[in-house]
Image (tube, rainbow, N blue to C red; front, side, top):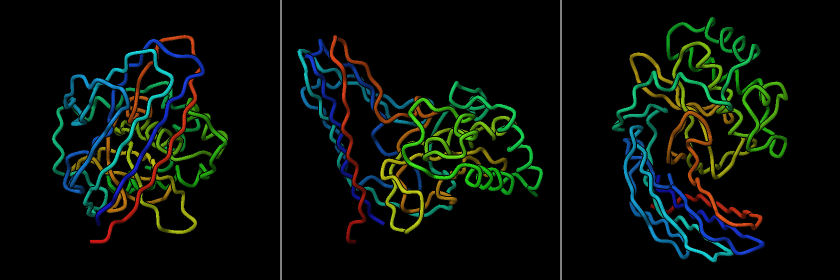
Length: 270
């Protein structure tokens, strides 16, 4: 499948800012499930800085915008040819060992409920892959996809207690439950071309990858109760949504920031 992406993020400030610095994970991953045909990231008024591939295999690009600045537009456009590898991440070069993802963050710190959920789920599993599937299934059943009920800083424990959330909450909860059972897990940011009715769909999407002994990293989208397939584009990874965020940055000055984001992912005619 060939997917086209049009992703625009507009930052506006009620007073001119002295400047802005950002780091981007907005370039599709190099792996067997996707091939980038063409891709561009532009930032209005910006000077592009250094770029590098980090230990997790993600491409990180820095940029700065000199002030005074009242509006910054980040525009992402491109085409990616995708294929279904049943969620298994292959052909992806990285140096970070899986054990590095056993360390918790504030967002993925497991409480008693998350620990119990994980323990009960893997107890029903017959092998490492089956246990990973059962973990994802348990999280998907425990948290109902409900937009607008959680916030960017909602933790996995809070989302599980609420029983509702979005893809970020499902991913955090799955990571927390897995790591509580000593299964390395990480957060993945990307895009989703959603065509099926009744599913939990967001064009700017997130899911988790779990380390399965004998196989490697396998993706699980607990919100949609599936593994990533040809409808997914993988961008970046981290221990939680903050570390894997496509755009991270800071603006210097007295102004208050407002954000406008639009994402469209479509299947191109082949």
